[in-house]
Image (cartoon, rainbow, N blue to C red; front, side):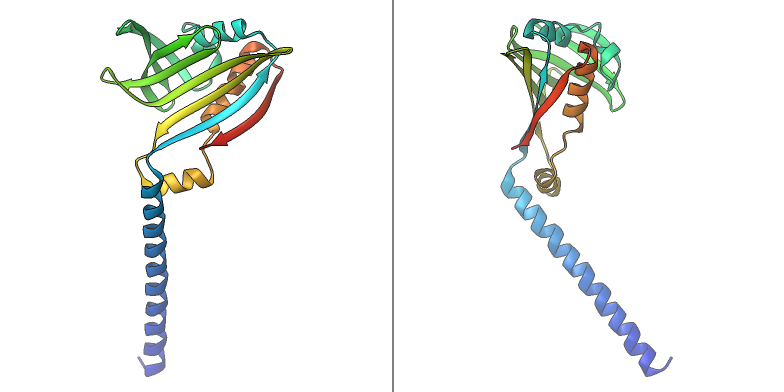
Length: 187
């Protein structure tokens, strides 16, 4: 190998090292920013339905009917109450999770939270139903915990709303249509 090829090889190695160093600095910077953000996040979505709040409320609390209209569920198993609150196991594409009804103020607010081993955990979903002329406005908020600091930054840049949007879309189909998405927001 002559000296020009050796110099070209060395130049390529230096370039690769620079790119790796830049990537490492970028990941470290994202991690540092993510650590400053904190692990808890809230994502919200709103929709209007041409149904009264009482009708929407009944659909949201119909445990036996949930697998029929929620596209993310394959089955739902009723469990013994947890500290006097209804609980159930949701079996879906992402595995199983135990959900409990954390609080309910009929027909305006419903809070569902995941539990692990009987201990409250994240995510926590809050349905706020507001009567509006001609129907109901639902504000669906999901609070969750993100452990990975880089993921925290990426979630702030482009918040994940697919589950909330899918749930509102499924609810629209169950109620017979006429939903209008109002707003999405991430904190």
